[in-house]
Image 1: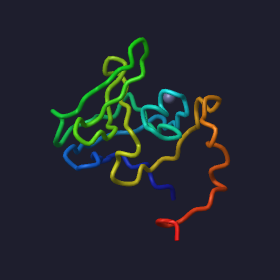
Image 2: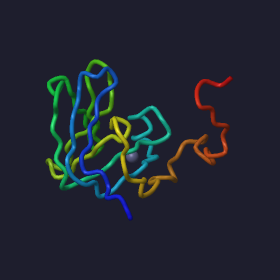
Image 3: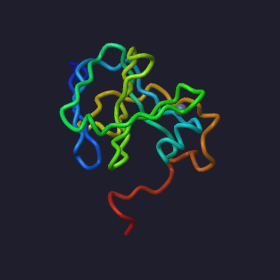
Image 4: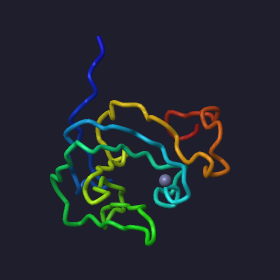
Length: 139
Ligand SMILES: [Zn+2]
């Protein structure tokens, strides 16, 4: 029997001051390797869940969330001013909820649909599954 995807999610920022819930389903989950997402996250790619139907509710810390939109683009980033953590935000005039997968506290419940903008990936972003894996710090 298949377990239905989790429809209720909670998330928070690094320092814990911001907490939120998302109720509903995600339509897609993309790992974006574009240059903007690499700058935005400081990492190899962004990991964002998208929904046009799920509802976001802030439980705490909403007043300290800032949103930056890159001039001349639709690239947008929401984050907590103090700890800098990437957080969910509404885009496209509120029509699209974008949830930063790393800010979720529990299991995401769905697998990424695709790596996107792979042609823009950084030079060390190939065959990462073959890099040695350690459960904690390297021994
Ligand atoms: Zn991107």
